[in-house]
Length: 125
Image 1 (cartoon, rainbow, N blue to C red):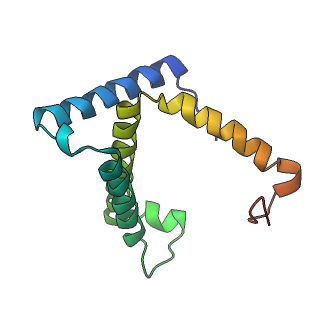
Image 2 (spheres, one colour; image 1 turned 60 degrees about the vertical axis):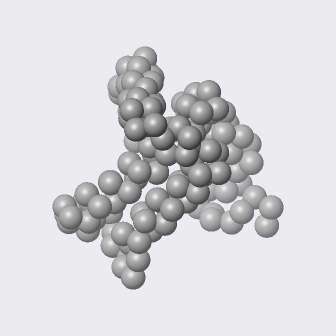
Image 3 (cartoon, rainbow, N blue to C red; image 1 turned 90 degrees about the vertical axis):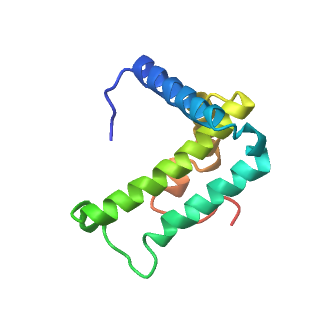
């Protein structure tokens, strides 16, 4: 899938979102609770809630897309995970786009397409 949104718009909206998250936290005086450990734990907790949306079921993408209630529940949990990850990026002054691009380049080296195409095996197995 190829995205056609200009990168400068994505960066601006991502920065705006990170600012909104920081403002939300600040208005509630929650910085005192936002330690690296607490935010990392919150990411894991919310990721668990995302898994819970699919527990005991293995729906296809098209089945999820046609079930608005399930799709909304999944989207809500994705948003929770994303908000906590962006909060952590703000805390450590990490640019999420540059960081993801950097890690993707590392993964390309670790999992060369010609060697791992169609395979789910780990790089060290």
